[in-house]
Length: 502
Image (cartoon, rainbow, N blue to C red):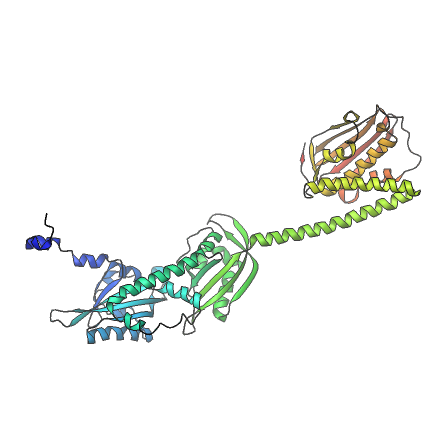
């Protein structure tokens, strides 16, 4: 089949011709046409979208009435149109700042935008230039990224010849593609940066750009196009909006170190405290005016919490070392007072230090979070045969201070039982039974089957240690009952620092 269009009859060829008016309207890039008096003749949908205007509000209006600019940008744009009308040759503006009035639905006012524009002559029936076609690209985002990358001065000037190339309409498409690729490359770097970054534009501090890390920090809320008050209302009362306005007023950066900020990860979620290192950097235009604030920083919550935990551990270690030294000093003093004979002193003192060390080992195994009551008892009773002791009670978690005090008490009770009580003879037995009620531990140590017990004629250090170790800050008590059938010790201790599982 011959598919050549030349072989088709003329009516059929006409049917195959595209509707160029429809094509103009659906082009994805912004296009508009003006006449020699700079009045709008036609605009496409993409042009209306980028300028946030309706077609019926533009057709027939003078461009410079619809978008007034009496400054340098307006003069440059008018001059470019006039060169096309006068010479019949294409003209272009690689970069032109031009403020656009925002619609009332966005709060009104003007917004500085940056454009790259190509102007092409369109002849009338007489062959003379009757219209100018403009293709424009909004490169505001690229300009903001360049300002962040190169500073207010911008990148180095173009190489010789680049401006000449941009003067030709046939190069405009390639130039726009290059701008798009450059924008995308910078945007990718911006979005994938490990630290959080955002660009707040204008005096109202409206979000223009945010990267992935910033989105993660704020719980992936939609913020683009919204002011910081609208997007993150919880930060105003924390003073951050005042800091941002201060940066714009003074034109000086602000650096924050490990500052606390309370954020909602979603709009209805409760506030969550995070800690951030950050800098607020004013964005300066070439004329020195401030166009917004660049926010950059990192979430250091894990570091701050780790430092707090480390300080807590160091403080706790210092406290425990002091307490341990005080305990050792008291044990040495009292043991020396009750056993002045050197060898007897050494044996008694070493035994008590070993008991203290054994409880330390229990606590070390749990990183000093606490110890089980049953384990504290077994440290002293395990050296004896299993039939020599009975342990009965639920699982009870002791705080470190409680475990150390009970460890010394149980050591004294077990040592006394081995020397004089139930553990000194083959048939004797020690029973330890306990319960917990309303957060208070009740433990009864009872000796059976040992030699007859008589009340002591004097109170020794062991008895004083048992009766006094649980008092003071722990708020507990220990009472000794020298019953004829065997020693009984009643222990009461409020479990202030740990939970009981009874």
